[in-house]
Length: 115
Image (cartoon, rainbow, N blue to C red; front, side, top):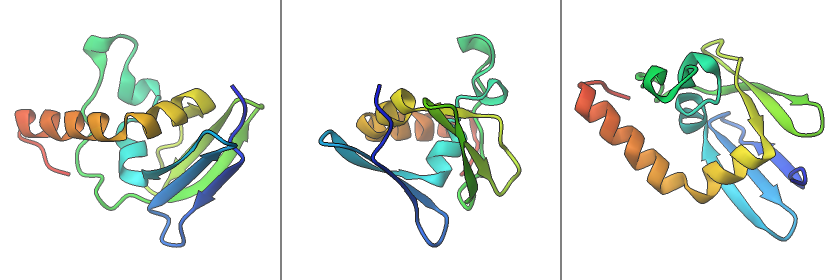
């Protein structure tokens, strides 16, 4: 998959805009990126180990680091920095933003947790 044509972090550090040449532009909130991080800390090593991460409503993006030609590492202001966001995963998050966000909110509610 081709790299995005642009990655832009908003001035308030709460939004990442990912643009793919001719194929879409996605606005991904920092909170969503943090709670859906592809890291083992969040995803576990199997679906049963996946963690629902609460309390990240105010998280911000500290920096973005390139990982080869296929991904970025997002460093968040809560010091989480182990997620490698591939171009494919960023596009997937953009395309499925509403469904994934609602599923996350449902998980929080079911577990009695808050954003």
